[in-house]
Image (cartoon, rainbow over all chains, first blue to last red; front, side, top):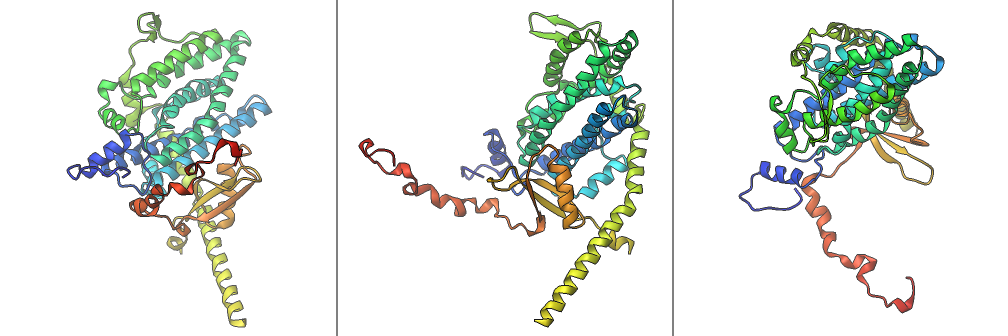
Length: 326
Length: 98
């Protein structure tokens, strides 16, 4: 890599030093197999989360309460599709074909963020998803803008620019509902009650139960631990909930003068691992929806391929005719 | 026939000119069955917020890239040619801006 070092240093050590010096790794660089594997898993999971994440929100497109909110929701869902595409492209630079990743999602081999296995029951959920789920995602994604793998980092920069609109539109929905009628405020509180803990779990297991974290930090794939990010998210969100006049459903939540952070209650990790294992309220429904979309779209993909083939054959024929006429 | 047409769509590289007067810059990549679809998808995927006034799409397989191993022979030789830079030359201040 950049600096030639002593001959006693192995290629793995050279790589570690390269990333430790804040250099970015690009697709054609040598990298340890485990680094490549970790990235493919993480980036494709991230891409799947964006794609599956369209489903809970798409649920409300046809029932948005105004034309304005429908347009916003459509734009947001389209962004999520775009984010999935940026990320699949980034993962592909590591040598894994797109079809393989899609196949892993459709067969249930690949994971995606557990949060999308919860249902969106009311319009207030569109507010809570934008405010809390996208808020938690942003905390993670801002960190990933500085990840050591160049294509992943570039995709994250693009995503972060767009994601901020998502959180703000969600917060706006929550503001409107919490300033509205008693029923509307209750609806907002109910959404917060249901989405709070799943959003806190989005950062993944606590540090002492997250075996791959240390390696990912050493490789500069991650730059902050799950617990650090979770704390940042909670500290930021508590104030926003206060502004809305809503109550976060955690009796143990309180400001800690000594640490300068909020203390919070025990996370129900049994629920987290149960949802990851496929037993959440909507796991089966989400995968079935993706499979249906994939299967229903097969004839369109086939038709486009057949058309492209015909066109290129025709073009070749025309060129040959011109050549022989010349 | 089914297998023949179902093969994966090729990968395209997308370049976007953010405004007239600036060069096209690499924005990312995408899959599409042909060049028209590549252009349309590029518009939807990479310019949803007025990011551009012009798009190029190029088949990824057409890009010829240098290897990271060639970094030294390709780029190191210019490291010791400081005389290619204006700051190499001492021109007295009296001469004025040059």
